[in-house]
Length: 146
Image (cartoon, rainbow, N blue to C red):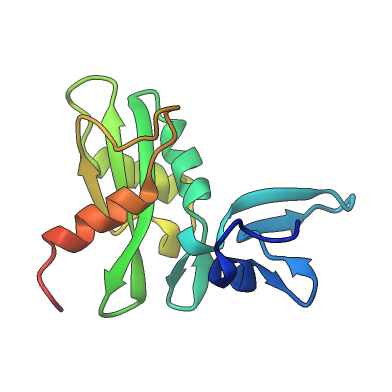
């Protein structure tokens, strides 16, 4: 790739020392295969620990009562950032406590969402991908300064 069309600043951020920095985070398994786990800009830093929203979303999505889920990091005075989950249930009756209890069974403590919002829908692209940036912007608009 030579760069982004008419966007030299973006090109300079993405191509450094001849390498294309995509912003994807990958892990290598024992056999040497790589798997993309998330995006750097979506990673949540909780008390110095990297938390990938996809991991938390996958755990919550395994609940029979959940239709869809989005996870973001939000500012937290104690830990720097905290995990916040937005959950769309299949039917009424799903509680924050039930989601948190499920997460405690399957996740390390610092990955368990500190806050959970049950809602009717999530912002999505035209092809149905959940827009975490919209969730972050929505959160930022609704919060009092800390």
